[in-house]
Length: 304
Image (tube, rainbow, N blue to C red):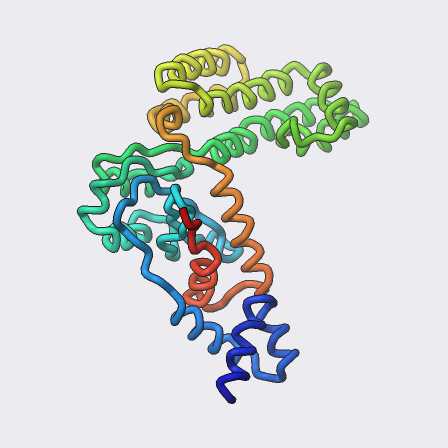
Protein backbone atom coordinates (compact mmCIF):
# COMPACT_ATOMS: atom_id res chain seq x y z
CA UNK A 1 0.00 0.00 0.00
CA UNK A 2 1.15 3.53 -0.69
CA UNK A 3 1.65 5.96 2.16
CA UNK A 4 -1.16 8.19 0.89
CA UNK A 5 -3.58 5.23 0.85
CA UNK A 6 -2.63 4.35 4.43
CA UNK A 7 -3.15 7.98 5.48
CA UNK A 8 -6.61 7.86 3.91
CA UNK A 9 -7.43 4.73 5.96
CA UNK A 10 -6.16 6.49 9.10
CA UNK A 11 -8.56 9.38 8.47
CA UNK A 12 -11.51 7.11 7.68
CA UNK A 13 -11.08 4.90 10.74
CA UNK A 14 -11.35 7.95 13.00
CA UNK A 15 -14.80 8.66 11.53
CA UNK A 16 -16.35 5.18 11.26
CA UNK A 17 -15.97 1.59 12.53
CA UNK A 18 -13.09 -0.56 11.32
CA UNK A 19 -15.49 -3.01 9.59
CA UNK A 20 -17.04 -0.17 7.57
CA UNK A 21 -13.63 1.09 6.48
CA UNK A 22 -12.66 -2.44 5.44
CA UNK A 23 -15.75 -2.77 3.24
CA UNK A 24 -15.27 0.69 1.73
CA UNK A 25 -11.58 0.25 0.86
CA UNK A 26 -11.51 -3.48 0.14
CA UNK A 27 -8.71 -3.90 2.67
CA UNK A 28 -8.92 -6.78 5.17
CA UNK A 29 -10.36 -5.93 8.62
CA UNK A 30 -7.15 -6.95 10.41
CA UNK A 31 -5.06 -4.73 8.14
CA UNK A 32 -7.27 -1.71 8.79
CA UNK A 33 -7.05 -2.39 12.52
CA UNK A 34 -3.25 -2.76 12.34
CA UNK A 35 -2.94 0.59 10.54
CA UNK A 36 -5.16 2.29 13.13
CA UNK A 37 -3.29 0.60 15.98
CA UNK A 38 0.05 1.90 14.71
CA UNK A 39 -1.45 5.40 14.33
CA UNK A 40 -2.72 5.35 17.91
CA UNK A 41 0.67 4.15 19.21
CA UNK A 42 2.43 6.85 17.21
CA UNK A 43 0.14 9.65 18.37
CA UNK A 44 -0.12 8.59 22.01
CA UNK A 45 1.44 11.07 24.41
CA UNK A 46 2.63 10.26 27.91
CA UNK A 47 0.30 12.05 30.38
CA UNK A 48 1.90 14.73 32.51
CA UNK A 49 2.22 13.60 36.12
CA UNK A 50 3.34 16.98 37.40
CA UNK A 51 0.77 19.11 39.16
CA UNK A 52 -1.84 16.36 39.54
CA UNK A 53 -4.14 17.19 42.46
CA UNK A 54 -7.52 15.54 41.93
CA UNK A 55 -8.33 12.21 40.30
CA UNK A 56 -11.43 10.30 39.23
CA UNK A 57 -11.38 6.50 39.25
CA UNK A 58 -14.16 4.48 37.68
CA UNK A 59 -14.87 1.06 36.23
CA UNK A 60 -16.72 -0.10 33.14
CA UNK A 61 -17.78 -3.49 31.77
CA UNK A 62 -15.49 -4.99 29.15
CA UNK A 63 -17.74 -7.94 28.32
CA UNK A 64 -20.76 -9.69 29.72
CA UNK A 65 -19.85 -11.98 32.59
CA UNK A 66 -18.51 -9.49 35.13
CA UNK A 67 -15.25 -8.61 33.37
CA UNK A 68 -14.30 -5.01 34.07
CA UNK A 69 -11.66 -2.40 33.37
CA UNK A 70 -10.66 0.64 35.43
CA UNK A 71 -9.97 4.16 34.18
CA UNK A 72 -8.20 6.99 36.01
CA UNK A 73 -8.84 10.58 34.93
CA UNK A 74 -7.36 13.95 35.83
CA UNK A 75 -10.41 15.66 37.34
CA UNK A 76 -9.16 19.14 36.48
CA UNK A 77 -8.68 18.74 32.72
CA UNK A 78 -10.52 15.43 32.09
CA UNK A 79 -7.47 13.77 30.55
CA UNK A 80 -7.46 9.99 30.77
CA UNK A 81 -4.26 9.06 32.61
CA UNK A 82 -4.48 5.28 32.74
CA UNK A 83 -6.72 2.36 31.81
CA UNK A 84 -6.26 -1.29 32.79
CA UNK A 85 -8.16 -4.54 32.97
CA UNK A 86 -9.75 -5.49 36.31
CA UNK A 87 -10.96 -3.59 39.37
CA UNK A 88 -9.10 -5.28 42.25
CA UNK A 89 -6.29 -3.73 44.30
CA UNK A 90 -3.73 -5.66 42.25
CA UNK A 91 -5.36 -4.47 39.02
CA UNK A 92 -5.18 -0.74 39.88
CA UNK A 93 -1.76 -0.87 41.59
CA UNK A 94 0.19 -0.39 38.31
CA UNK A 95 -1.34 3.08 38.00
CA UNK A 96 0.12 4.22 41.33
CA UNK A 97 3.46 2.62 40.47
CA UNK A 98 3.44 4.61 37.20
CA UNK A 99 2.43 7.76 39.08
CA UNK A 100 5.40 7.49 41.44
CA UNK A 101 5.85 8.35 45.11
CA UNK A 102 6.32 12.10 44.64
CA UNK A 103 3.19 12.55 42.49
CA UNK A 104 1.17 10.33 44.85
CA UNK A 105 2.04 12.63 47.75
CA UNK A 106 0.57 15.60 45.85
CA UNK A 107 -2.87 14.01 45.31
CA UNK A 108 -5.52 15.80 47.40
CA UNK A 109 -8.73 13.98 46.45
CA UNK A 110 -9.85 10.93 44.49
CA UNK A 111 -13.48 10.48 43.40
CA UNK A 112 -14.81 6.93 42.99
CA UNK A 113 -17.79 4.72 43.64
CA UNK A 114 -17.93 2.68 46.84
CA UNK A 115 -15.24 0.27 45.66
CA UNK A 116 -13.31 -0.94 48.71
CA UNK A 117 -10.37 -2.19 46.64
CA UNK A 118 -9.81 1.23 45.02
CA UNK A 119 -10.33 2.95 48.37
CA UNK A 120 -7.69 0.86 50.13
CA UNK A 121 -5.18 1.26 47.32
CA UNK A 122 -5.61 5.05 47.32
CA UNK A 123 -5.11 5.18 51.08
CA UNK A 124 -1.99 3.03 50.77
CA UNK A 125 -0.28 5.10 48.06
CA UNK A 126 -1.75 8.61 48.47
CA UNK A 127 -1.55 9.34 52.17
CA UNK A 128 -2.63 12.97 51.81
CA UNK A 129 -5.68 12.23 49.64
CA UNK A 130 -9.34 12.29 50.64
CA UNK A 131 -11.58 9.70 49.01
CA UNK A 132 -14.78 11.28 47.65
CA UNK A 133 -17.66 8.93 46.89
CA UNK A 134 -19.54 9.72 43.73
CA UNK A 135 -23.14 10.93 44.07
CA UNK A 136 -24.35 9.14 40.95
CA UNK A 137 -23.09 5.72 42.05
CA UNK A 138 -24.36 5.97 45.64
CA UNK A 139 -27.84 7.15 44.65
CA UNK A 140 -28.03 4.53 41.88
CA UNK A 141 -27.09 1.88 44.44
CA UNK A 142 -29.86 3.12 46.76
CA UNK A 143 -32.28 2.91 43.84
CA UNK A 144 -31.35 -0.70 43.07
CA UNK A 145 -31.09 -2.02 46.61
CA UNK A 146 -33.85 -0.06 48.34
CA UNK A 147 -36.35 1.58 45.98
CA UNK A 148 -36.48 -1.38 43.60
CA UNK A 149 -36.64 -3.90 46.45
CA UNK A 150 -39.54 -2.07 48.10
CA UNK A 151 -41.33 -1.76 44.75
CA UNK A 152 -41.11 -5.53 44.18
CA UNK A 153 -42.22 -6.28 47.76
CA UNK A 154 -45.21 -3.95 47.44
CA UNK A 155 -46.18 -5.51 44.10
CA UNK A 156 -46.00 -9.00 45.64
CA UNK A 157 -48.41 -7.93 48.37
CA UNK A 158 -51.01 -7.11 45.70
CA UNK A 159 -51.31 -10.57 44.15
CA UNK A 160 -55.10 -10.40 44.41
CA UNK A 161 -55.27 -6.85 43.05
CA UNK A 162 -53.99 -7.37 39.51
CA UNK A 163 -54.55 -3.78 38.26
CA UNK A 164 -52.78 -2.29 41.30
CA UNK A 165 -49.94 -4.82 41.07
CA UNK A 166 -49.48 -4.03 37.38
CA UNK A 167 -49.18 -0.30 38.07
CA UNK A 168 -46.45 -0.82 40.70
CA UNK A 169 -44.55 -3.37 38.60
CA UNK A 170 -44.41 -0.95 35.67
CA UNK A 171 -43.36 2.01 37.82
CA UNK A 172 -39.66 1.11 38.04
CA UNK A 173 -38.30 3.89 35.85
CA UNK A 174 -40.70 6.46 37.29
CA UNK A 175 -39.23 5.79 40.73
CA UNK A 176 -35.58 5.60 39.68
CA UNK A 177 -35.36 8.51 37.26
CA UNK A 178 -34.62 12.06 38.34
CA UNK A 179 -37.92 13.92 38.83
CA UNK A 180 -36.61 16.79 36.66
CA UNK A 181 -36.31 14.40 33.71
CA UNK A 182 -39.93 13.26 33.80
CA UNK A 183 -42.51 14.48 31.32
CA UNK A 184 -45.62 16.22 32.69
CA UNK A 185 -47.82 13.12 32.39
CA UNK A 186 -45.12 10.94 33.98
CA UNK A 187 -44.81 13.37 36.89
CA UNK A 188 -48.55 13.11 37.49
CA UNK A 189 -48.38 9.29 37.39
CA UNK A 190 -45.53 9.33 39.89
CA UNK A 191 -47.38 11.66 42.24
CA UNK A 192 -50.50 9.47 42.16
CA UNK A 193 -48.43 6.35 42.80
CA UNK A 194 -46.60 7.86 45.78
CA UNK A 195 -49.82 9.17 47.31
CA UNK A 196 -51.33 5.70 47.08
CA UNK A 197 -48.37 3.82 48.62
CA UNK A 198 -46.74 5.00 51.86
CA UNK A 199 -43.69 2.72 51.65
CA UNK A 200 -42.82 3.87 48.14
CA UNK A 201 -43.33 7.48 49.22
CA UNK A 202 -40.92 7.01 52.12
CA UNK A 203 -38.07 5.47 50.12
CA UNK A 204 -38.56 7.99 47.30
CA UNK A 205 -38.19 10.88 49.76
CA UNK A 206 -35.13 9.19 51.26
CA UNK A 207 -33.60 8.93 47.78
CA UNK A 208 -34.11 12.66 47.17
CA UNK A 209 -32.82 13.63 50.63
CA UNK A 210 -29.74 11.46 50.17
CA UNK A 211 -28.65 13.63 47.22
CA UNK A 212 -28.59 16.71 49.45
CA UNK A 213 -25.54 15.37 51.31
CA UNK A 214 -23.39 16.15 48.24
CA UNK A 215 -24.53 19.78 48.02
CA UNK A 216 -23.79 20.86 51.59
CA UNK A 217 -21.87 24.17 51.85
CA UNK A 218 -19.47 22.73 54.46
CA UNK A 219 -18.39 19.38 55.86
CA UNK A 220 -20.06 20.19 59.18
CA UNK A 221 -23.35 20.80 57.40
CA UNK A 222 -22.91 17.59 55.41
CA UNK A 223 -22.52 15.66 58.68
CA UNK A 224 -25.64 17.34 60.08
CA UNK A 225 -27.60 16.37 56.97
CA UNK A 226 -26.26 12.83 57.30
CA UNK A 227 -27.48 12.53 60.90
CA UNK A 228 -30.91 13.74 59.83
CA UNK A 229 -31.05 11.35 56.86
CA UNK A 230 -29.76 8.41 58.92
CA UNK A 231 -32.41 9.05 61.57
CA UNK A 232 -35.15 9.12 58.91
CA UNK A 233 -33.93 5.85 57.39
CA UNK A 234 -33.62 4.04 60.73
CA UNK A 235 -37.08 5.17 61.88
CA UNK A 236 -38.76 4.31 58.56
CA UNK A 237 -39.42 0.70 59.57
CA UNK A 238 -38.43 -0.38 56.03
CA UNK A 239 -35.76 -3.08 56.28
CA UNK A 240 -33.97 -2.46 52.94
CA UNK A 241 -33.61 1.24 53.87
CA UNK A 242 -32.37 0.40 57.37
CA UNK A 243 -29.81 -2.09 56.07
CA UNK A 244 -28.58 0.33 53.41
CA UNK A 245 -28.20 3.15 55.98
CA UNK A 246 -26.16 0.89 58.29
CA UNK A 247 -23.79 -0.07 55.46
CA UNK A 248 -23.52 3.51 54.22
CA UNK A 249 -22.46 4.71 57.68
CA UNK A 250 -19.03 3.13 57.15
CA UNK A 251 -18.52 5.33 54.06
CA UNK A 252 -19.49 8.61 55.72
CA UNK A 253 -16.06 10.27 55.45
CA UNK A 254 -16.04 9.81 51.66
CA UNK A 255 -19.52 11.32 51.40
CA UNK A 256 -18.91 14.41 53.54
CA UNK A 257 -15.60 15.02 51.73
CA UNK A 258 -17.68 16.14 48.74
CA UNK A 259 -18.40 19.38 50.64
CA UNK A 260 -14.67 20.21 50.44
CA UNK A 261 -13.79 18.70 47.04
CA UNK A 262 -16.44 19.45 44.42
CA UNK A 263 -15.70 16.71 41.91
CA UNK A 264 -18.24 16.82 39.10
CA UNK A 265 -20.04 13.49 38.73
CA UNK A 266 -21.17 14.34 35.19
CA UNK A 267 -17.58 13.72 34.06
CA UNK A 268 -17.93 10.05 35.02
CA UNK A 269 -21.31 9.67 33.34
CA UNK A 270 -20.14 11.36 30.13
CA UNK A 271 -16.98 9.24 29.92
CA UNK A 272 -18.86 5.99 30.51
CA UNK A 273 -21.34 6.86 27.77
CA UNK A 274 -18.55 7.65 25.31
CA UNK A 275 -16.72 4.40 26.15
CA UNK A 276 -19.95 2.47 25.48
CA UNK A 277 -20.24 4.15 22.08
CA UNK A 278 -16.62 3.22 21.22
CA UNK A 279 -17.28 -0.38 22.24
CA UNK A 280 -20.60 -0.54 20.38
CA UNK A 281 -19.05 0.79 17.16
CA UNK A 282 -16.72 -2.21 17.13
CA UNK A 283 -19.37 -4.68 18.35
CA UNK A 284 -17.01 -5.41 21.25
CA UNK A 285 -13.19 -5.40 21.12
CA UNK A 286 -11.29 -8.66 21.33
CA UNK A 287 -7.95 -6.84 21.63
CA UNK A 288 -7.81 -4.90 24.89
CA UNK A 289 -4.60 -3.07 23.98
CA UNK A 290 -6.29 -1.64 20.89
CA UNK A 291 -9.50 -0.86 22.78
CA UNK A 292 -7.62 0.95 25.54
CA UNK A 293 -5.68 3.01 23.00
CA UNK A 294 -8.99 4.04 21.42
CA UNK A 295 -10.27 5.13 24.85
CA UNK A 296 -7.10 7.13 25.60
CA UNK A 297 -7.36 8.88 22.25
CA UNK A 298 -10.98 9.81 23.02
CA UNK A 299 -10.03 11.65 26.24
CA UNK A 300 -6.89 13.74 25.53
CA UNK A 301 -7.93 16.34 28.08
CA UNK A 302 -9.09 19.92 27.83
CA UNK A 303 -6.61 22.71 27.11
CA UNK A 304 -6.70 25.23 29.96
